[in-house]
Amino acid sequence: MVRRTFILGGYQTDFARNWTKEGKGIMAMIREVLDGGFSKTGIDPGDIDSVHVGNFAGELYAMQAHLGAFVCNYHPALRGLPTSRHEAACASSSIAALMARTEIEAGTYDLSLVMGVELMKSVDSKTGGSYLGTAAWYEKECAGVEFPFPKLFDRLYDVYDKKYGVNYEHLARISAVNYDNAKRNPNAQTRGWYMNLQHACSSGSYNRVIGKRLRASDCSQVTDGAVAIFLASEEYTRGYAKRTGKKLEDIPYIQGWGHRTAPILFDEKEKEAIANEYPLPHTRGAVTDAYRRAGITGAGELSCIETHDCFSITEYAAIEHFGLADPGEAYRRIDDGTIEIGGSCPVNPSGGLIGCGHPVGATGARQLLDAYLQVSGNAGAYQVEGAKRAAVLNIGGSATTNVVHIIGRGE
Image (cartoon, rainbow, N blue to C red; front, side, top):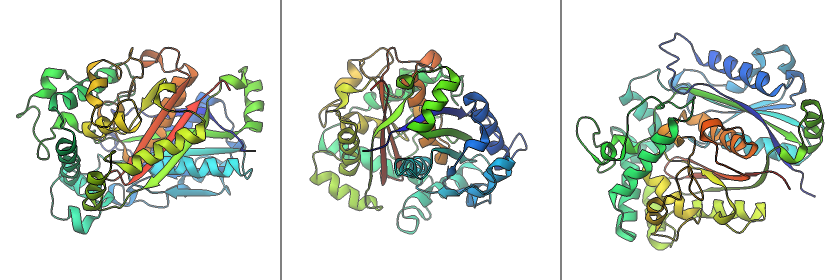
């Protein structure tokens, strides 16, 4: 029998903050997110059995590796615990969560702390763009290229346009919706920013083209942030529910998951995109794996989706790869309001990476925390009414690492 893994909540730092300007480093982020996580959930540090930290490039942005060990400095009860740091570019903390879930399902541990952390505003934008290039094959794709990732995802835009046709206004609409959703989220980086469809459709000094066609409004943010979540066995969760006055059936758990990796070179991805109905076949495979493990047939059984909109074109693709629309028809779900709060399956009610922010190594954990908040009915102003099941897609690199989780309750 497969053991269920529950999510007991967590904590997110304010993604609008610039920690370097505050004179604070990565350990300060770790301390704050753990203070918040333990306080918000009421979990005792002495109950933790293992720790998994997701981080992409601490060695570059913060000149600090070995981040799993830093958690042991937080509280004496955490000393001696097994800790590890996981790297999979933008999917780093999703991989951390997968590893924690595997331990719990195996019966090895009952309660795991999963944390994602990234300090990114410690360098200028050109240097940061070069650092981000290490999520691709740097020597072949990014060396000497200014802001390489917008250019890589412009190639995905080209593939989609040649294969099915893409009206840029639909990409602009995705961005405008995510900025609008972010205004509801008290931790979103852009919650006070100005953006509407007209601005997203414009180009020029206030919305410059970053790649070939993608514009600043199509891009996710450079963000400092940390997120902590707690994954637990059913045995521990039963005791936790009793202590906190909750019902077990109201606590979200991981119903399904998928994890697939594509070739790292975009040249190889482009060949696969041309040959397949779904331009990102490994992303689609991770989605269908998660659906199968969750025992559901598709997107019609989802209440909402938190997806990896590192660029508007990746959310456009996700709409199809989750099955909300047939390949080439994502525009239908944009036009009919499906993806908006109040629609039949809102996408990125948190604001996503474009609106909420994208601290690379923390994004997967943030998405899982937001899925938990939606399914438990605690998302506040961006709550999807009646949400019972949420899907999460977190990708690393140019759709290289693909991790999907299905979070639900009440079964």
